Amino acid sequence: MPPVSIRRGSIPPEVLRLVEEHKARELRRDQQQGMGRPIIGTESWGYQIVAVGSTVHWGKWRTFFDFLSDYIKQTLGGDWGNVEIAKPLSERHPVMRWYDAVCHYQQRTILEPGKVHTAPMTGATAAYFGLGYSLYLLAHNVALQQKLIARLKNRDQFQGAYYETLVAAWFILAGFELTLEDESDATDSHCEFTAKSKTSGKSYSVEAKSRGTDKDHLDVGAQLVKALRKTAAHQRIVMIDVNVPDDAARSAEDWLREVMQGLRRREPTLTVNGQPAPPAFVVVTNHPYHYDLDGISARLVVLAGGFKISDYGFDATFTSLMDAFKTKQKYIDIFRLGKAIADYRIPATFDGEVPEFAFGEAERKWKIGERYDLAIEPGAAGVLTTATVSETEKVVYLVFRLDAGRDVIATAPMTDAELSAYISHPATFFNVPRPVGGKLNTPLELFEWLHENYRNTPREKLLEFLQASPDLAHLSTLPDDELLLVCCERWVGGTMNTTRG
Image: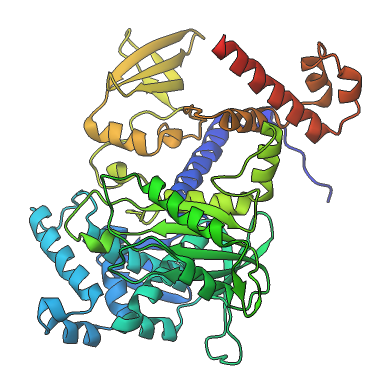
């Protein structure tokens, strides 16, 4: 039977709207749950059912945090937890000290039992639920090794194991497929895992190191050496956590730059096993939540650089915007990893819905493509065609296409909950995916924006844009992708000259 060709114009508008709504749900889920396997869950007979890998869990969970609270207890073991709780607080395992702080915080903030409450993340909730989320992501996407769980329970090995779970979670969320090393193989000193990018197909050997507590310096050279001693089958990515309290009086980026500059100074002289040290991408983080369990202002910070990779990192220099763009595309996997770390959040819902809508704080009133009865005149009705939000006014501007073909503009006030839902997910607030304008802070960001928006432009149109160029004859010989890069670079240059003028 020959394939059936369906023209877009022949598809009923109702079907097109359902397709767009599905795209919006998927986009929202990706933004909340990252690029790993989605949360698989459903409600039945008053229970929330959640599949984790090949294991099914069920319980009376309203939020994903409720599920994580039970999941971490089950994973680490109730008997182990009860033994720790019986100890004085100061002698308990760090995880159980976090748990104690979480319980007290919930007692202060949950004023109506059984009702979903919203409260800022504290150091304790970020650390405790973050560990639960990492364990869930590993079990759901790869495997949860018993040796790792044993190391987490061991106080002396806990910090390193805790950071390894966090690093694995970041890679999963960034869209990497992980292959864990054989933990029973004692014949070789290998990296933690291999990470294969789902987008580029490239594989990386990943090693994670966390410094101990109570350090009075920021040097991570010892951690780098230990990481580079491991056998690696692929390009190396070394993750190092400086593990220091968040210092609000000093820019986190400033001291992370100090860390990276210290690594740069070692490049000419560092040796591993008597040989010059191999190159590696080095991602330095600070995950300081366990230092202030009751505080809410701690920052997760990430900075990536190249050890013996001169064209990657905060101090890399480029001769042109085109050169910078090409280099970023060359190392796009590492940039995506850094973004996933910077955007890291624990989802609150199972299906990716915005919490304000999922838990009844607000209602998704305005859906593009849906028909509404309007109060402008008796019997008036129209389809919402476009909408925009003014955050400062707390107002939504709505454009309706009336049955007679005329467009009308209306406004509606927004509640605090609606505005919060919009700010967290502006691209899908109106139930269809829409591009959302953002501030372009650098010439490279403008270059990338232009490249994304003009990447499907026909060659003839690009040459038309460049027809006044004195080197048009040469430009006409360039491949399509190079021609687009030239256009973007010259557009940015013209914009910058106009701005300066």
